[in-house]
Image (cartoon, rainbow, N blue to C red; front, side):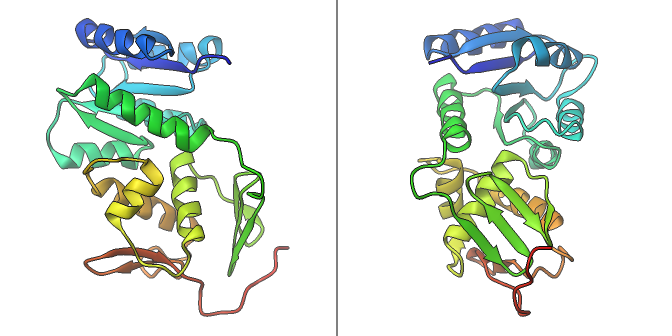
Length: 239
């Protein structure tokens, strides 16, 4: 089986070497670059399956890299690294397309665990009997094609946004806590930062709701979490 390819982007050689050593030890094919612009030089020749991306970079910072990748409809998973402790900086990374973030200093084993979790969730092929179409009002989720449509028109979601929506569909009508969503979608088996859930819920609402401030699909259950419920109107056929 071909090794998964991981691109590490960090201008601190000691951190790049530490990450590279541990990821190669785990069986990954790893390349390292030291600035944001170099990411785009590596996309075609290396074709990374995942990018470990530092926030503070020369030439083009991590936020700019995320934004440009998503603008190009490149859905490669991104784990952002930041030395900044401010929650706002972490949320900004998620808002611009990062799938996960870690604060420096970090444990290489935890980084590896998060990368493995992303690959488990995003790279698994549909299993037998998994060819399901979830139909909720104007919303359609096609599991075999990994596509989402609203009123028959495709909606561009990142891999993590798709997985979150699919998890909500599979538990339609059930109230799910942020911790349940964190475990079910991000595959974290430790106490994680549940704000990552809120950011992705916000992204989903922006893309599938007519009015994100007054959602008809993803409902907030105060002090608990979220649930997916159909709109009050009857289902509308595609086309």
